[in-house]
Length: 246
Image (tube, rainbow, N blue to C red; front, side, top):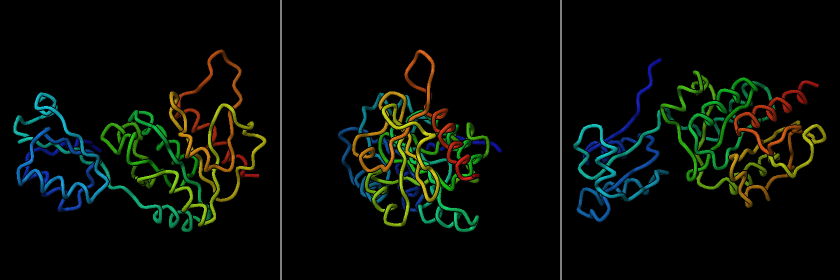
């Protein structure tokens, strides 16, 4: 399968992409440009989850592949985003308790691609990412996932903490990865569960962490104090697999 960077340039093309409900991750607009067509694009963008960034002309010129951006460039997702209901439906179809991966502050597309690949192998029913401070479903993510992106639903939400509250109402509980947590072997990771993973640098945000039922850690014997986020996610995911197989 061949993947292409989905860059959309020019006012008409970007406006039509929004009106056609194309999944747009980011919109870059020439700072100070407020004419009618640009206002229409911004108005359409605000109806979606697209992140709007105002930049200087030099930045747009660097980003442009055609040299005819007309003050606007949009980055479209390589794949359609799923909904959380899609994830519940997949779990029900498989006759399994829901197992979701929630990612906070993951901005590296290689990490996200690797996590989607591991999520598929570990039997997770979906991955949830936040709208901001997170990489979307780019072509790089698709390549690194090695095809797993075709099988793992990925949902984008406005607020992870609020999403956790909503999922708790549907019978789920949550385990957050953190170095100060309880050893993963001592935590009950069975049932309908969401595994929350943060970046190596910032970890899981405070508000999200406070919503979790368990704070759990991986035993480490080395001289550094953290693992790559995708590696940590893989280890904890397979501890969930192990406990489910008992």
